[in-house]
Image 1: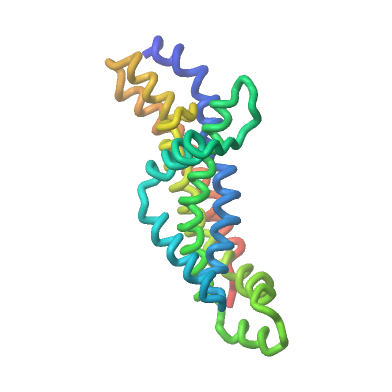
Image 2: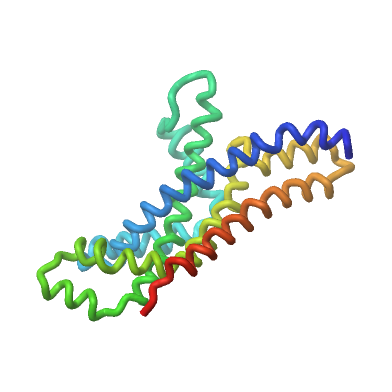
Length: 227
């Protein structure tokens, strides 16, 4: 066990730091793209509604591993899409951002559906009153509906974030050096201590996800819409 910890211990923080960065950047992007998708799904424009419906239903029901591989093989290797500067760490950095792109494309569908459920908590009369005053759809959506919807679904959005944190393990399939890749490498080296390796990585993820759950639980109570 001491030999395992001597080899694995110094690598834990760098690996989980990559996991945290994947979660952070993917969460920001997914929140933005998911909000846009939610707006399109309730838009009065049929083409926008149709696009959002098809996108959400197709991407949400596609395995995340396929989306990650599509971003790596399809976008980079076949189409030459590079998301990182061309330097000595190009492959490592480019794979990181390709993984972030994949997580954004996938997680945004769940953000969209979560927000759409929040729209149902906003009294219809508020939107109708705003339209009667001459406000446009973007104004009604951005000023009246969206702020209330977000506050009503902070808890479910926290669940989406926790799922995203756990989904970051898929990034290892394209060589991103996050926690699960470290686990695979350590299992190959210390095949007789598999349970210990699993336990160390599991505890790391538990610390992250329980912290996220606590923060979002607090925010959900603190910012709940009182009617």
